[in-house]
Amino acid sequence: MENSESKVPLWEKYILTIQEAAEYFHIGEKKLRKLTEDQADADFIIMNGNRIMIKRKLFEKYLDEAASV
Image 1 (cartoon, rainbow, N blue to C red):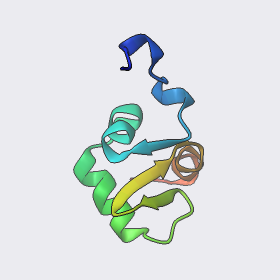
Image 2: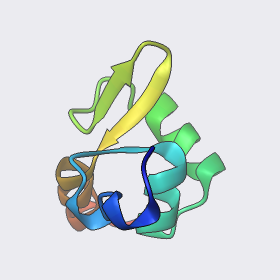
Image 3: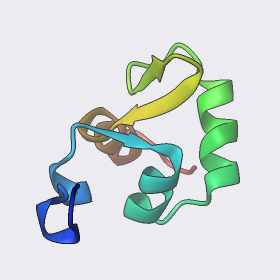
Image 4: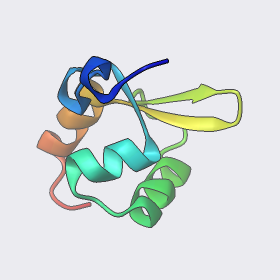
């Protein structure tokens, strides 16, 4: 059983779920889902089965270079 003290903080995780990415980057889940749908071949997306995951550092780089989201 895992307690809250043993959880890895979002800023240390390699990949984030859509919900975690929305919280971390302050972007709505709906917007992130649309973005991952439009950018399906982007290097910051990884699929875990049918679950969309966001590679945190690569998405940070994408956002640094983006004029708008």
